[in-house]
Image (cartoon, rainbow, N blue to C red; front, side, top):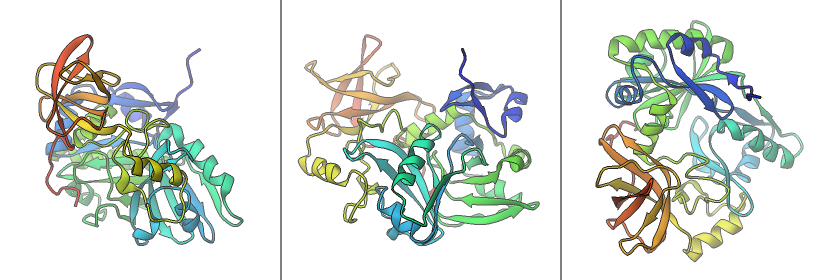
Length: 368
């Protein structure tokens, strides 16, 4: 039997646009649209503006007296570093340091934290937080109650301004706004490296907001973009994907995400294990690979040194539309240094690559 897939509030819009749909975290989501394709959609985001339906992302909240302090004692990053009205990238880890999920936490107040986990992991994150919540703190999932539309690219501000929505606030901040009576949370966040926003909208009003954004973006040379372009864009920036570059077996230390860990906090899930791992300096580390020959590395491709010894494995790989060559993220032995040349086994064929530090594409200060 075919697994039943959930539909975004914008499903009918995607069908009308001739989208190629596929299962993504249990949701039937657009990979690319007819008349464009991944490269054209990717280029629109880098050069103009792209619109993404990311309504498959989860939403949840922790509310009640001391909610922020409680969440801060569980997830890795330190909420005390940011003021109310700001957002923060963080991780939900096991006690052994594996990553259950990476997510964004939005600080609304000492008694209100809004969370955006990944689609397939929302229930697990909510269950873990709920299990240890102190009396008076309620943790609930609102998965499916909201649509989320990402507006990404150098012309993102102009697109939102056409709807009268606020722009220009700091990166990783959010503002409550409205459009034609529709409440919208305008978040200065995104997964492309470009200047952009993510709009959190009640599900039943998401189609009207989407239509208005498409109308505003089209004269600017913008277009809807699918999850295929979202993946090439995030890989160019070296952003991790849970399930590939982060997992129960790939810790924040291995993924070079120590900046998203509040090491000095009194507690968070996995602190003892991660602190020990960080001090030992023995695990593989995530590095970037730029292919120097012809070939596109993919997840699980073996990486070897010049003498043929296996020194790692690709976790994410793709063709970079911006650089027009293969790129990858890979877990490599610590003996491999930046600037080294390695060999990637791409379907039985040796492909040379240089070890680099991501991002693979520099987009200036568009995030700022």
